[in-house]
Length: 271
Ligand SMILES: C[S@@+](CC[C@H](N)C(=O)[O-])C[C@H]1O[C@@H](n2cnc3c(N)ncnc32)[C@H](O)[C@@H]1O
Ligand SMILES: [Zn+2]
Image 1 (cartoon, rainbow, N blue to C red):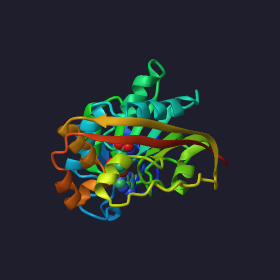
Image 2: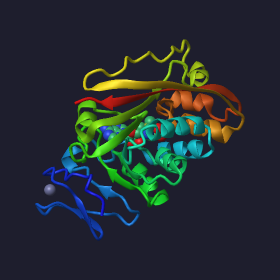
Image 3: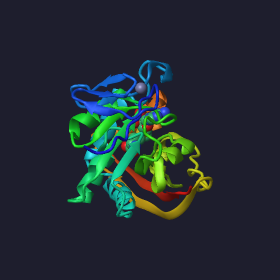
């Protein structure tokens, strides 16, 4: 049995699998749902009853990702993780419905990986667990990771909130942190339809405290979307889905030229 990676959210002791539950030595127990995920988000850590992305947003993201439009991004993230030949225990924080972890496992081919996905949205984690029984998915927040100190070889954070102090704590010495974030032109074509004067995404300076930047790659592609369902899925998975007026205005749009532009940074954890 692999060494534990998960920590009890109540007492921070290791959690070990015991049939259909995870347990710590203090007697706290967390049931594994029928779909295979475990809920490690305590009621008092939730700011709303149903935090994170809702079902509609998730369904839109699933449809768009599974159509392959972000394939080059999935491959570049996988490559960034696999660039470290010693990385085996990988945690995707804010994993959504697990598409990037599944892509990572495909790209790793025969290399064994111990993959974990955490997300604050129960809907996302449940969908991820159903699709990927080989990985372990848990409901958990990025600000307090239910992971043992120094237990992870690599963390992924793609378009998701990240608490860098927590990332530093859970990574082992020289572990890798792979961060994907929007580049200046990301979805610019879509944003020109929503805002009168769209601006480029501002450049975010690399992390410094506790991490050394090892590599930076920019994944850029023109996306020529030519059917209304795909365009609706893209809008539905972005924050623009919240703006009802924009959504109404763009309803039924059957042609959209926009861009994928994502900056992937790989950091090494410094002691
Ligand atoms: C834009 S989505 C990105 C999902 C996935 N990484 C991807 O790139 O497709 C952001 C994700 O972060 C999750 N999220 C939001 N706040 C969170 C938090 N505090 N802790 C963990 N996950 C969070 C949402 O539920 C959602 O699945
Ligand atoms: Zn405990």
